[in-house]
Structures are given as structure tokens and as C-alpha cells.
Image (cartoon, rainbow, N blue to C red):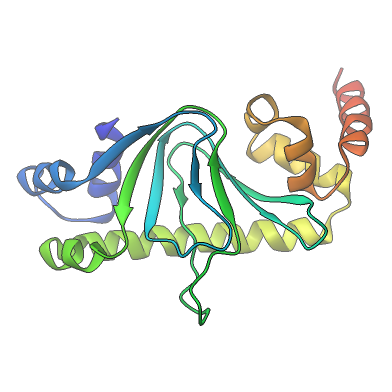
Length: 194
């Protein structure tokens, strides 16, 4: 698992091997069971995560009590809630492990200490966030401009593994459709490909 971290350190920093190893030794890696709630909607986040193995679901419960899935984080993706713009700093989302997970766990209160100790870690984090934000912006623009069937086809092109890893009702929520609509779309799309 640590080889994944070395990949990012090599890509985004100029730390030598010894410095990389020291930083990796300071990073906390935890295992979580399927169903573990990492963050509850309304709580103030004090931790951020980077997925080494597994799948984490981000969702919220709307005013009618309906769960709305907004993202899935899988291998080599950061699962972080950015809420510094909010006065009360509470999270609008919950994070739950959909599978057994191995995650890098970052303490947001200790983040500055880590950045002071390893100045290139801050640069690496910023570059990773910028890269991810660009991808999210592109996906969101495409998502809102696409009809449901095109959203599903885009999912099959970009993240096909989610179809087998995520319950259909959560995948439908993520795509902004009902589970019944997703079933019909899947039948049409798979018929077209066969």
C-alpha cells in the first residue's frame, strides 16, 4: 500500500528516498470495516482521508429525509470535506465505507505541523487538490448538460468499476435518477453493446 504513496511523493515532490521514507513513516494508515461511518452530516470534520483500497460514499440527507449520493471515492482518491467557507464549519455530507477500506488518515489539526515538518507535502497536497478540482469541474459541467443515459454511459467510460461495487439505488442517486430508470437505461445500453 505504501508504494502508492511513494508514487505521489515521487510525482509531486523532489524529496529524496530517505526523506520520502521518513514522511511515509509519519503518515497514519488505518483499516475500516464496510459500513463504518467516517463522518456524519452536521459534524465538524477533523480528519481527511486518502483511499488506498476500498470505496467511500459521500452523501447527504435532504430536508425530506431522502439520501442523495454526491460522490464515491475509490483507490487513489482523496475523500475530504472542504467547509472552511462555512461559519459553523459543519459538514453538509456524510462519509461511509461501502467496502472494507485501507485509508491514509490525516488529522486536520495536525496538518500545519506536518506541512512545517515536510514543506513539500503542502505543495504535493495543493497540486493533488488542483488536479482533482479540475477533473471535478469538468465532470460536473458534463453531468448537468447530459441526459441520464449519457450520464450512465460517461460513468461506464470513466468509472466502470462502480457499477459492480456500488448498490444500484446509490448509483442511481449519484446519477440523479431513480433505480427503476437506471434499470431501464442499463438494459438499453447493454442491448446496444451486445
